[in-house]
Length: 447
Image 1 (spheres, rainbow, N blue to C red):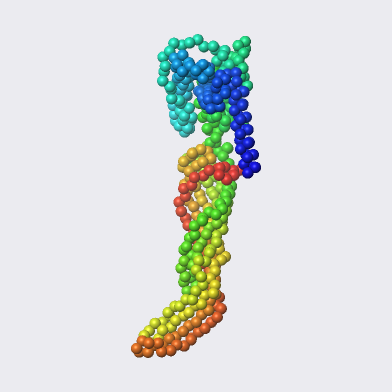
Image 2: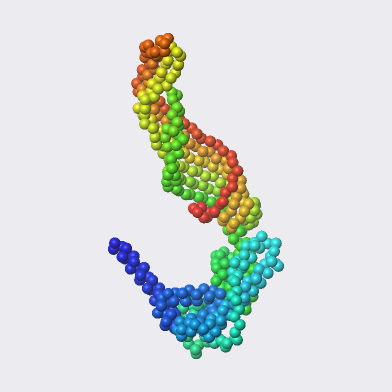
């Protein structure tokens, strides 16, 4: 009970602290009516941050509208800043989409035959937004310095949160936006010179900074940068040739497979027991031989080998019983065999698999996830030992001509017979192979 109370207290303190942080950040920006209502504050902040991804200048319009709506209780859309906000959102959306479509146009014109054409184009297409409806209103004068303050409030994650009308916020804004552009230029330079630095964050930088990149005066060829990055990702120098994989599953089946049979020299018993597959261990390795400089259709051959061990148990589901079998049956003489079963067992179970395969990629989802086809040769080793302990009697019975029993004689009587048998159900198989390979993912290690 005390641990539950402690957890609830921790969650309460965390939520309270988060709420207090929001109030502190927006204390000089939003009206006190918003700050004192946690639900309205949360909704307002979430909206502000979402719209800022379109353009941080939208804070200027959104804050004015929120303070009019909740502070001055002004619900008239013509005077509370609602239409101005909608017009601004439409303007920034059109500008954003126009810039993104220009990038896709460049891709179509200069890189149409490039194999990465579609994937690069989709990066920009996925960033397109639906434009809100236009609201016709006369354009009011804008306090540009206040707008720049709101932009810096967003850029600085709230560190710049108190407006000073005597400060020129355009200076710090230009510095920040220039810094972002410089970071992109550094990535571009690294890609062109093949410097060994991590450039994978270029995608997130573009997604996060569409507004800055669309406004920067610097000549940054984003399309070329993305094509260079794709080429780097798919280059075989960044794809390791040797891969190792290991995985383990516990209790892989709860159901029992009742197909086990015991076949001794003297008797056959079907559905003797149940096979349960419990724990599975798998180890594999592969080696790739490349024929092309980049990962693409049939660009390499992958040689792989794997070993799988399944821990298997057999449970006997029949009790030892007294069995009779008719050996000879004529009108005058009948011979019977009787088995008094004392013990039935199955043990020394082998259940493992060895597989080797050769495959090549035909569909490339990304450099480390490919759909391969090829051939596989596998050896499935499955077998077990059966053991029986029983007493054996053989009786010859005589019958009169009228069909009634006359007398019987015992031909054999053997006590404590032990008999074992090896069941081998091992198989070799050559089969077509279709596999989805996730290199360096899901337990695969590359070297």
